[in-house]
Amino acid sequence: MSARAERASLRSNVPLGFSVDALLPKARGGGQLKMGLVKLGEQEWLQPDPDLAARTAGFDDFPQGIQLTQGADAPGRELATMLGVEGALPDAALAAHEDMCLLTRTVDEDVYRLIGAAVAWPSDWRPADKMGLPLRALHAPIAGYEELLASGVDHFMAKLQPGQIYGRCNWFIAPTGAMRWIAGANPEDDFAHVSPDNVGDTLFVRSERQTLRRLPETGAILFTIGIYVDPLGKLSPPNIVALSSAVRNLVEGEGERRGAGAYADALIGYAKQHKGDAD
Image (cartoon, rainbow, N blue to C red; front, top):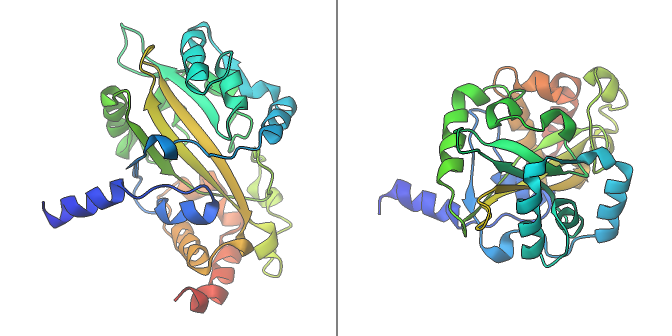
């Protein structure tokens, strides 16, 4: 095995954790967009100890997070059965920490479309706006997706086999520690309360622990999104420093989408104070 292949094999066996601090080292640190997938075992698929009361409250507060097409019924029921609950997609999402989306393609199309969503805690998107869209349109707001990732994602989805589970993670900076976050129209307003003196308590780091697997009976692809949120000041010093580097190295256009101009200086300054602790 070549050294490159050995490194790739090791990465594929590194599990994803269930916290911001555990996920951030495996998230992309700025620069070129990458899928960054790792293989997961069945026991690593979903968070083992979900707060089901929080899930119920989340959907009660955000009923528009459930969006279903007729095509979502059969795969939703298959998924619920896999999780040991009765019902369909919304019932499955109520029984787990993760939000859940279903994608399928028709016999006359090569593209996967979003056919069902049970999302209590979105990170700056609204499920109703995305229903029925193909993958490329779903990811259109992400700078560089079409040029750098679209073809690879399409190929991966087409080749994904039942029984395989893949995971990845990402990060966002938010002005709130709430599990549900929809950005305002003006990042300067959203982050107006953040200052160099309070940045550790007022900037929040969100990470989505995402997984993909194909349901064996219906062939639909399930996309799960586990949300984890912590204030910047509670993260390990190496993660704080890595985030500051990632913010400085976002691809063109990505910083604008993330509102980085409203918080980057405060975050980078805070990280400089912790750089010695990270060494």
